[in-house]
Length: 172
Image 1 (spheres, rainbow, N blue to C red):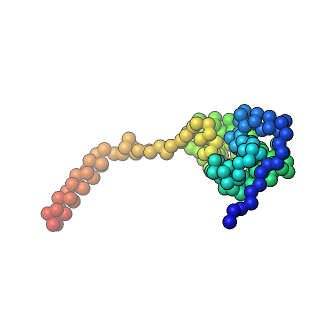
Image 2 (tube, rainbow, N blue to C red):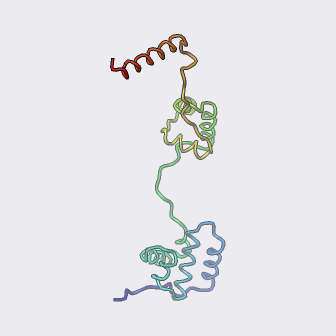
């Protein structure tokens, strides 16, 4: 059983020119793809064929056509998406980057100083995201106590360990 298909009906020359321009010059790949799909549909290409060209579901192409019929050119661009506003403005993000540069081994200190200076608190993951977007990073620094040890006691302990190992292998 063949599914009934729909097409974009009667595009005038102004709309064709506008769609061609959007398809050729728009920065958004999605807008270019939708504009081309509307042009293909107006020239008789089926929804299934358009879906196969762009590797999307046929219902997606159908919704593009429905939105085109309802809204025209405004339907081609993406609608605003949900999500919270940014916690920090550009100046505060630069402050975070400066704090990380000043304390690369201590992200907790950077978070504390940010809260002190701006009155805003952010999560550790938000800090990581800001640092990563700036091309910065921090890594755990391994600390050694080798310089603080008592060498005589260390050597004596090493001798004791060797003695214990000999005793174990000897069965004592």
